Image (cartoon, rainbow, N blue to C red):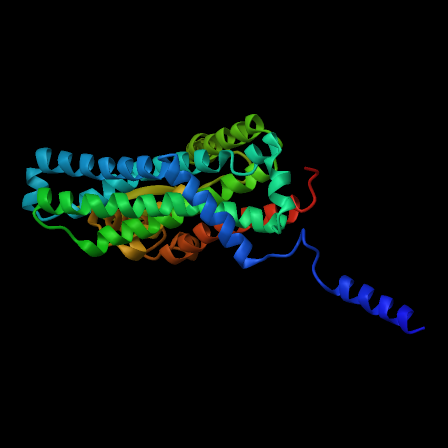
Length: 326
């Protein structure tokens, strides 16, 4: 009787505890992330990315120093550095992040090494989170190293620069990179081969930098022809002391456009930097909406959009990866 009771008690205890495949062990996540990062260092991937970001900043700075005497005279060199660099990193960082996450899980599944990894005391969630943290660390630390080394050259070429704007650009670039890394690792976990994963990465880039960038033009053409529920709103603005009248699309169109991580990255820079070129665009946008931007175009909401692109893809992947057949 007592042995039967003990068996029942053990069964109840087992059912109450999380299964190994679904639980998260922070030590296990840390071990996987650490190995992923160390593998990147051994393959020179990390150092290559760091050198790339260093060259990017030095290249933009050198161009400004050589061709931007008027800009330097106005003391706006850091503004232009942040503005031009952000326009380049807006495209470059997603490409790097998608390539970094391409084989994160799909490569392990294709070679069968995922089964060896899961034979160790690692759950599927541990593997997924560890890969995300490891790949994010490679991109983030390489950005920090590249920006840090370039700061010396930037200060020397520009004479002086605004460290707050510089660090603000770095911080937002890291968050932007982690968002795309989350998308990449999540997609990689849902595919069985690197070929399919590569096609998925290309599809993501095409959607955000092909399709999404044409939405504004497409919506504008539909509004001109008054097709369906598309319409324009007339507003009065002022630029360089001259009053003008313009037309904009409906509010909901701008909400859709701003869901793009790249748009959110450009908008959120006003939260951490004080760049005249970006601030001017914000002022012109405010005039479009009667003097105040709607909440979905404000910098704090753009920051939430970037956080959404970090959390949502990995949340879906955590749910699905537990259920896929390896």
